[in-house]
Every structure is written in structure tokens, then in C-alpha cells.
Length: 178
Image (cartoon, rainbow, N blue to C red):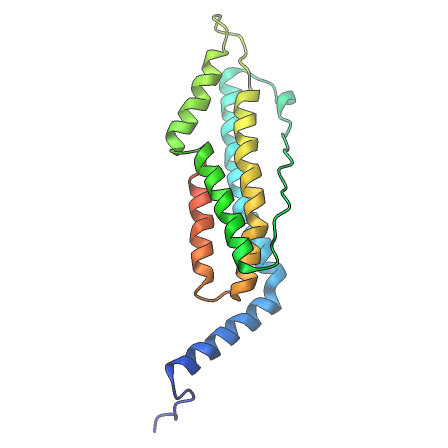
């Protein structure tokens, strides 16, 4: 004989699932946020560093110039309510789109600027600050987006609504590769 249904309505079933996801998130919040930060910051940065090292090796640069540029673009953003978080994320997205309209075109432009700084002799070095500055701008925007997305996830209790914020953050991270 089949078990009797626990939930009489679809809303009750959804509410129970929502509560279960909220409890799981509350219990594992630190690990979830740590994993998200690693995926959003570390891996793209590692890929970019590998590309930079390959370029440096191919162009004969030493590792002495491998210093990380850090920009301080922290704004006083109101993260105390969902509309404030969504507005902050929209502003970050708009800044990203203003900086990088098309990823390939952006990368091509940065590399063309770098190539213009190469001297005529085959053994000269170009201005690597062009690439480092572009990288720092993109990473600064991503660093600003992470706490906003985390706040949105907190407000949405990791429910179906949070998938909208997740898709926006994925869009930002995939359209900012250099």
C-alpha cells in the first residue's frame, strides 16, 4: 500500500522544500560561500596567470614583474535589502558591459595596445602594465560582485529566486575572461 501524501497542496510541498533548502544552507553556509569564492575568483585568476606566464615565457620576460595589481573600488553599497543588492549587481553588470562589450574584442584590443609598445628589435620588452591594468579592472568588478551575490542568495534563502542571481553572476564571470 502506498504512503499517504504528506503535503495536501503544491504550495505546502514547495514551502517544505524551501524550508529544507534554507536549513541546509544555514547549516553549510561557510563551506558553500568558500566554494563559490574559490570558483569565482581563484580559477579564473589561475587561468589568467597561466596565460600571463606563457606569454612572459614566450616573450622572454622574467618572473620579477609578476606582482599583483590591486584596486580599491569598494563602494558604500546598501546590502541590507534585496532591492539594494539587485541595484548594486545591476551597476556592477553595467560597469562590466561598459568595460567589456565583447570579450574577444576587448582581449584583442588589450593585446594590440601591448603589441604597439613592443620595440622594433626582436628582443625588446613591451609595457606589461597594459595587460595587468585590464586584468585588475575585471577582477575588481568580480570582487565587488561576490559579496552582492552572496547577499542576494541569503535574502532568497537559496530558493528558485536565487537562480536568477546565479545566472547573472555566471554571465559576469563568463563575459570577463581576458
